[in-house]
Length: 142
Image (cartoon, rainbow, N blue to C red; front, side, top):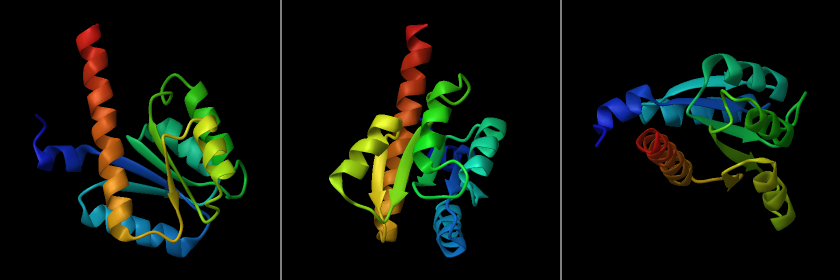
């Protein structure tokens, strides 16, 4: 089992959101929980950072300048270095069709704005645990 301290200090999260307040809140909450957080204000910038930094988790707003969040998810899934990264779609549009589009584009989870901080922390931890579990199962199967 991975010690909680090591798990937290080694997990990298990329937050893509064009609203500065949303980025700042996410960064504060996630860094307080012990994660390393990188920010991007456009989909294009976020994709570039993801390919350079290879985060463990990407939180992307669906409506951002440049590439939208769906296109970011699709591009991450196509690239060998990021095809397995966990992706959470974050949006104020909670219609079922938007959720379906996000999952179809490659997102693993969907978080509606506004959200409770506890919900954000719970989804992040869940997705990071799943990422570690899948990584371990790939190593075992080799």
